[in-house]
Length: 178
Image (cartoon, rainbow, N blue to C red; front, side):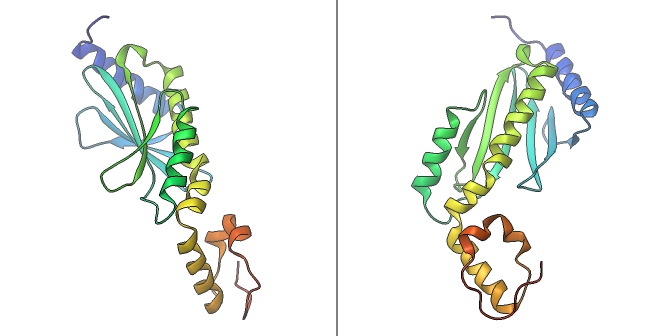
């Protein structure tokens, strides 16, 4: 295996910038050397923010998925472990607070435009594609309380529409505005 050089790191940083600009993906420099903070637009989540760090030997990527579930930890973690089997180059993990992230690391020599395109797609699927299922498993009781509160006040339930089938019971009082 060949050793990476500082020139390799600089070349990969340039490749990352060119890829992000060419793909019209929103990004900014992060606080660490070689770090890019990338915002991927989502469908279920508004956006997924990734930290991409080009180091001396490897490129690492990390994205927040969901905060520590309020309930059903075993079901949430089993779901994530099953999904880990299908994530090329990435894996779910939790931090000390129990918040869920998706992370990966690859040697600098493997970083190409095709790899970047693939890994950002996998990150987006891992964070955005699984988001509603994770919320339904880990936060259903909180969502039920918010739904009832909004219904009781005639407030909009639009932010919970994706979960209507889990939350809706015979509403009492005025119908919420969309």
